[in-house]
Image (cartoon, rainbow, N blue to C red):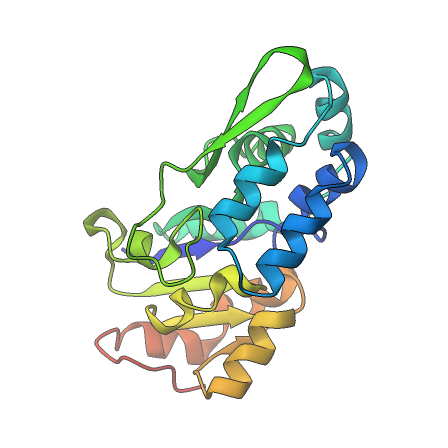
Length: 228
């Protein structure tokens, strides 16, 4: 059974939901942590933990914003196609699980497994982030170590496919058989010479999965690179 690891922010939804929440509801100090992360002084796990502690928003306000977030309109059809093929699709994100679950449920996709950082709601409109999928050996100190997830036994399959767009996908792009990439991940794959297929939206992803060339390659899953 093939396994698809799919990023969320910037991939399933066009915006980065975590950044949008911080811009709307966090104390201004979140930007200092962002600058430290971009400069490489802290990892993404420490950055996000500190930023989430700066959120000041009621659950009702939080939900109101999340209920306004639109996903790629072709993603539900992509999910249906993948499940019809008998494949496994897992959302793997260095974002916030609460946000991902709420948005997926609104589109009738609450059945999709989600591996992401866990949001705990505290009193007074405050929050804490924990990291059930962190890895102490993660080179980028991510909250969700996508490479570690890709190596899990239950994620093994004849073909592992990554669909992603950003920095949190860079490492795992070297650990899967097929990479569907856009934006920063696309640039990274080109610069590093990593085999990849560019996409713009999930209509493109559907076309790739349905292509004769992809079907031929899938039968030769022992290969470690893509023929495209």
